Length: 64
Image 1 (cartoon, rainbow, N blue to C red):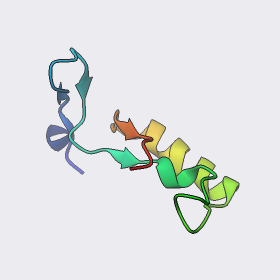
Image 2 (cartoon, rainbow, N blue to C red; image 1 turned 120 degrees about the vertical axis):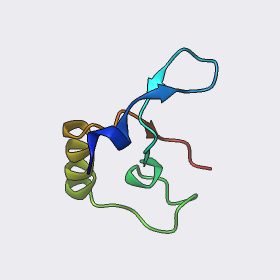
Image 3 (tube, helix red, strand yellow; image 1 turned 180 degrees about the vertical axis):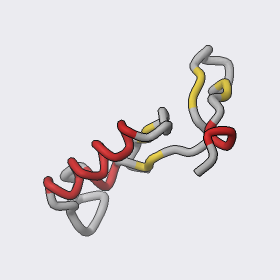
Image 4 (cartoon, helix red, strand yellow; image 1 turned 90 degrees about the horizontal axis):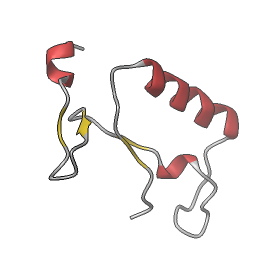
């Protein structure tokens, strides 16, 4: 993936700069009432570690 594609941009008027790609991380938590499945803890940790080691700086944890 080209780093040019992941150049940080303003997030609305918040003053925060984030990458245009976001990791939707809500399904990684234990929320069976929202998601009809759970992600095994070890897989969730691998996913988060990979995201933190990448240029992605935007994680969305909202359930909906």
